[in-house]
Image 1 (tube, rainbow, N blue to C red):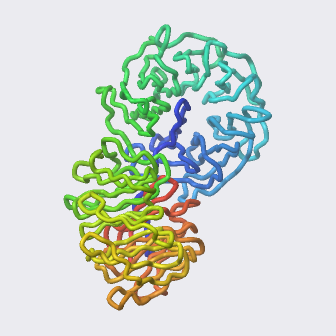
Image 2 (cartoon, rainbow, N blue to C red):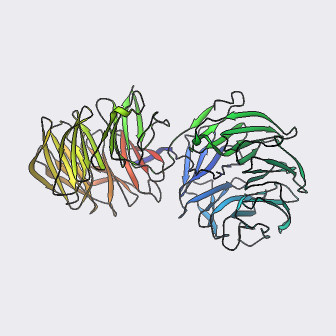
Image 3 (cartoon, rainbow, N blue to C red):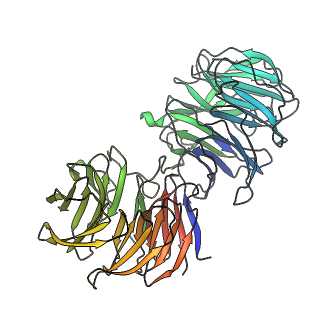
Length: 594
C-alpha cells in the first residue's frame, strides 16, 4: 500500500454544560467509548493514543454502548436512530438499524445475553423502547414517565429488572421480559440523571440534580439507603459507575469533584478535587477494571489516582470541536503538530483567540502565527507555549489567511493585504480591485503571491517593507482556495474551486509546469512535501491526493481520509509522513511510500 494510517489523534467528547455524558466500557475492560459530533470514538484504556473512529451516523451521536458479548456496539443519535455495528472488523459493518424513538437518544442498555436492547431519551410518542436486537420487535413497554428519560439500565442476571431515570424527578422499576412497569421511585426532588445496577445485580443506584444518591434492592426495588447522609455532593450529580466487585462506586458532579463511595457504609472514601474553573465540572465517569475515569466539561478525560486524589494520573487532552487548520514545527529534534487549538495533547496557557482559528504557520523565530475570526493575528512562542497579550496584532478586518517567510508575515484580510515585520504592521494595501482569499510569501522573501476569487494569482514584489504591484497575474481555472510555494521556492502550487491544481515554475517566469485533475469537489487545502517533489491536496470530496510535480498522472489517492468529513488542513512531518485534520475534530498521521 502506498499510504498507511499510522496514528489517530482522536477528538475528545463533545460536552454541554449541565448535560451528563455517558461513557461506555467494553466487557473485556480494554477500551472505552464516547461520542463527538457524528462520531463514536473508541479508545484503548491503557494507551488512549490508540483510537478508532466510527462515522456512519447522519446526525449527532449522543451515546454508544458495547454489547456484553463485546462483539457489537449500539450507538444512538439525535434523530432517534440506533445503529448496531461490528466491533471486531476495521470496517465496522452495520448489523441492524432501528428508530425506536422519535427524538434524541440519551442512554442505551443491553441484557447480559446481548439479545435485548433498551433505548431511552426524548420522543414525541414515547420516551423509551425495549426490543430484540436482531428483529427490532418489542419485548415490553417503557412507560410511567411524564418527561424525557435520561438514563436506563438492565440488571445483568435473571430475573431481569429494568430501571429508568427521568427529568420528571422520578425513577421507574420494571420486571420482565416482556418488561412491564412495576412502580415509581419518588425519592429525588430534581431531575434524575443516572441509574445503574451493580455488577452482581443486588443493588440499584440513582443520582440526581439534587446532589443525592439513593440505593435500592436490585431485585425488589425497595429503598435500602442513601450515600453521604443529607447530600452526596454539593452540586448536581451527572453520572455514577460501579466498581467491579459492587462494594464501591464513583460519582461525578457539577461541584467539580468525583467521589469514591463505600456503598455498605454509605460514606465517601475519597474525594477527587478536579479544579476550580467552571470547565472542571464533572459530567461523566467510568470504572473499568483498575481505571477510574471522569470527563470534565472541558472534554478532558481524567484518569483518577486513589492515592493522590488532587492530581489525576493522566489527563487526555485534544480537540472537542472541528479543526480548521494545523501546522508542523520541528523543535529539539522532534516534530510537533499544532492544530486549530492544541499541540501534542497540550494546550497553550493564557488567553487565546476568542473565535475560530482559520490559518496558522510556524515562522523562523520559533513563533506560531495564527489568524482568527476575532480579527486578530497572534504570535505565540513555541518554546514558552504561552499566549501573550503583547503579541496580538489587531486587524482592520477579518483575516482569512496568513503566510510567513523571510522575516515577513503576509495577512490576507477581507478587502486588504497587510505586511508585518517583527510582529508589527509595516504596510497595508487597500482597494485591491479583487477579493483576495489566500496569500503565500516566496521563501526568498522577495515576492508575495495572492490568490483571488477572480481566478487569478496576483504577484507583488516585497521592496523594503512595502508590497509593490508589478501588474503580473497568473491565470487559474477558478476562484483560488489555497496555495503554497515549495520549500525550495522552485514552484508555486495553486488549487481552485474548479477542482484543478496548478503548479507554476518560478524560475521560468511562473510558466505552468503541470495541471492536476482528480478531485470531484472543491479542494480546500494544500501542503508541500519537504522533498519539493510532491504536494498534497484535500477536498470537500473527502479525498486527499498526493501529486508528483514532474508527472501529473503519477498520483496517490487517499479516499475517505476522515470518513463523511472533508479534510480541512494538511501538513507534512517529513517526506513520508502526512498529517490530516478535519471537522470530525481528529488529527490523523499517514505513512506514504512512493
